Amino acid sequence: MTIQFNNETFRDDYSFRNSDWAIKRFPFPFHEDSYMYSVNMEQHRGGPEGSVYEKRFDVDEHYLSEMQDRAIVLAEDPLRCQSLPHMTLAGWDTLELIMVSKSEDYPELFELHRDGNRWRWVNKPMKIDHTFTFLDETTLPCGPLEYITRQTQGDFAVLDQRDEMLWMDAGMVTTQADWSLDFDIGMNFFEWHAPVPLAHEMGIFKRALKFLLNVQQGAPARRLNWTMTVNPLLDTSPENYHKWGIQKTTLTPENIGAKQHLRVELQTFFRLPRSNALLFPIRCYLIAFQDIVTVPKWGRRLHRVVRDLPEELATYKGFIANRPVMLDYLSQYDDGLPTSPGVWPDLETEPPLAK
Amino acid sequence: MSKFQFPESIASRPVYGTLEPRPGKAHLMIADAEGAEAILELASQDAALMAKTHIIYIPKGTDFSEKLRALKPAQFYEGPSYDASVQRIQKVLGDAHMGLQVYLAGTEGLMGQAMNEAVSAGIPASAIQTEHRGSVARRMQCVHCKGITEDVVTDPFVCSHCGLNLFVRDHYSRRLAAFQGVCIDAEDPGNVPEPVELYK
Ligand code: HEM
Image (cartoon, rainbow over all chains, first blue to last red; front, side, top):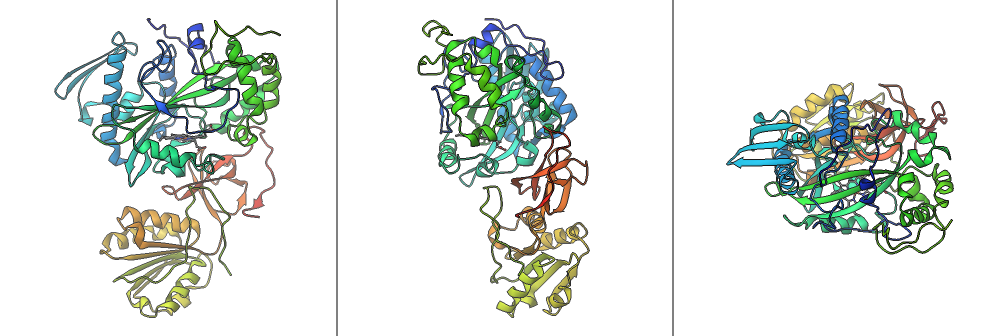
């Protein structure tokens, strides 16, 4: 299908909206009626047609507006994109992986023509047609990681692998769930995860690291993570928390359906060929509560998950104060009927709301 | 006694040990304030050590300097602040030969910063020891303006650069040698709790 790109904002007047298409393909993260941390990883080998899992790097209706938002963030704070000196090769690996994947997966939107190291990259939606020399930084307007991730939705962490450990040594981070690349750069897997509650004790990070160290080239993996965001604000950074934090206090029973968003991250893991680094794209999808509950199964389930989520997790995810007003709203969409297993909307088979 | 047992903490926070004399042709000891006590103890364990030792010491208002001098180290430097001493530290580390042993003692801020200098000068981690002594003050980076506030002893505290009221987040960056300070009243402007002493 051809994608109609929205012209919308993720700040100020928040004109961001999901079309019906985007709602139906939303990566709903709960496969059952409760949630707890787990080593929830699987192969990233496509998915149902039209789903966000189908392509290596999903492009959707928010593409152009997300790239505009990224440009605004970077203009205000260039430290959101950083790369330690030894990570330049991994930046070229990233550029190659994304250009090759996007041109193969979306030939009507992106083209890559390679003649030795002479590359021509065409990004039709962003009106870019650029010829450069692969591995020669002087032929790009900025570093390779910044260049390609200014044209690709989602945040990116690039992990160097050494001493049986992953090190966060480069990244582009403008749509993050409240963590700072500038603070975390140079940390190892256990260090940057240090603030997460419960998961260390559960042994999750040890097992996850073992899995990641063994991700092979051509065999990417993926997982979902989620949190809550008031207003469709992409840049929920700690850097700007003193500006956006106040928005969390603006929820009312009247506006919550439109204002409260479930924020889901599709996280993927790709081994890079030359540098042996691991690329970790973190793609953020937002959906308003009022849109989630148009899918009866999701409405029922979200109510149960939010209601039963352990307090530590609701606190860490930053919505403990808003949980009561969320539950008042969501309970209207939970009639107590059982839900089908799995994440899919199952619109044809699940009963409508009986309330 | 100025040794403090830090409570069980998160994975990003360094763990400090107790300095012990190690064999080596040359020794570099960098300390501030009560860190001097750790050096004095070290010297008392190995009388031969000091003849091969360069001490860089920042008293921060304490009076251990004479005692350190009395150890007769091969070289002794007293600096008025860490910032004033850092170029000297870089030079000494840059000139170091294989086998240099590095000993860091005192506040977390000093150890964290000197550790970074040593590591970036190529000193292997196995040749660097640390021992916390004295103030439990933290070196804090404001996550908002990126300014560093030294010697923070209360939570919350005021960022010395942008003036926001920050709480002390228990998350540590070795690269910055600092903990993270985050705005405490973002969701309720003006509601800033009374500062309490750290670890109280
Ligand atoms: C190597 C790639 C990864 C990177 C760069 C990464 C990065 C992060 C960061 C920066 C945070 C926020 C920590 C904070 O509060 O400051 C986080 C949270 C978390 N990470 Fe990872 N992570 C990675 C892989 C994984 C994997 C494989 C798992 C598997 C279980 C995982 C599980 C979690 C969990 C459970 C949280 C808490 C999220 C929440 O409750 O909202 N991470 N991660």
